[in-house]
Image 1 (tube, rainbow, N blue to C red):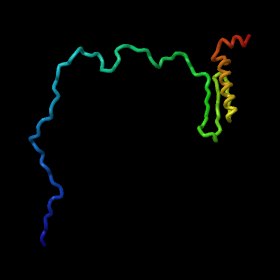
Image 2: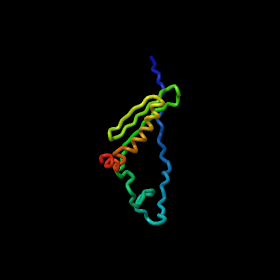
Image 3: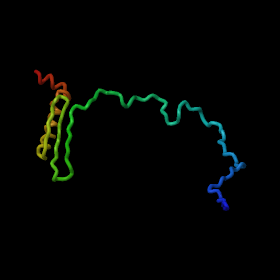
Length: 120
């Protein structure tokens, strides 16, 4: 019986030894004055854009009016003083929008001067 030799399936490549070195960055002299911080960082102190100025949402009006005329619109008006109303239908939503505007003019949280007059 004779044995037959098969050629190797993978070939081993040799590593070249004469590769040139990668180019290195050249150190250049700094131009201008040295900077205290990274570029783009403000050096002056600015006011905090998220600081609290005491304003809070008090009254909300949420109207859902789909673009299709076949869908019935709805609305909800609420206030932190306890005022809360809902409306379904075109005429009722229009009345609620008007009532919400009237409430904003008479709400004791939005107009504290009215509270003293109403109590008197």
